[in-house]
Amino acid sequence: MLPEQLTGFVLHRRSYRETSYLTDLFTLELGKVSAVARGVRGNKGDKKSLLQSFQPLLLSVSGKHELRNLHQLESAGSMLQLTGHQLFSAMYLNELLNRLLPKEVPHPELFISYQQSLQWLADGGNIEPCLRQFELSLLDEMGYGFDLTQEYENGKTIEPNVDYCLVLENGIKRIDVSAQGEQGLNPQGSNRFTGEALLQVSQHIWTPNSLQCAKRITRMALSPLLGRKPLKSRELFQQTWTAAKPANIGNAK
Image (cartoon, rainbow, N blue to C red; front, side):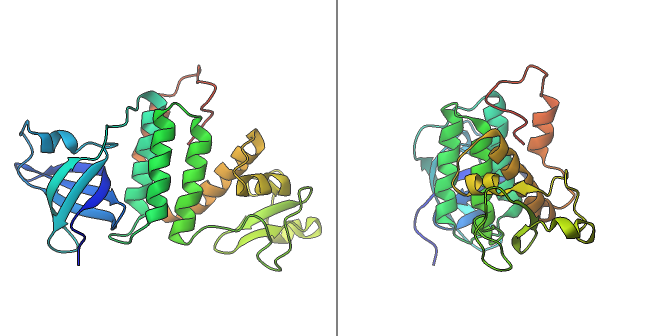
């Protein structure tokens, strides 16, 4: 049975027939929901103005699981004000959720993480830690996360002064220097992490090394899930990138 009221955000909307929108929503109670907002295109009423990304909503839906009908729609707070690189970063979060989440599987902890990430960006917080923490939360919620504090083969604790690699679908493994050729590892390659950086990432202690470590791990883990279709938000981000990048961004995505 559907909840009477949902709390959520619009991830994406697109035109549907002459007067409606197809919307993808991320809700606290049901997770990702696809619904038709009927009769709102061309309408100057409140319903259309509320169907914007980063606007907290109270809503209700009915109908079939694959494509529901959107009914009640009202504001649950002020729209988050996002511009520039913060806006592109928030769009990136939306695209990850829309591309990767299955329909109507609740993820309440991820929803809270999403809300916190949007607020962080709206407040002008450092972008890269925000994205890395959200990516790690998303992977954990989907069952693709890794324990960064121990080796997956034997449960040994990660040591700060030892180098490790990531084995997808398994976890962290110590690099055996004598067998690097067999493992196909490049000592200078992207799949090589210091134990110190891994432990910092696990504790959300952000330094240049731990941010780079987290970025490489999440890229490796997300790539097979996203497939070959490029992320539109990343393309927009790169198109607007300039040499005079702000100090709090780095190459965030």
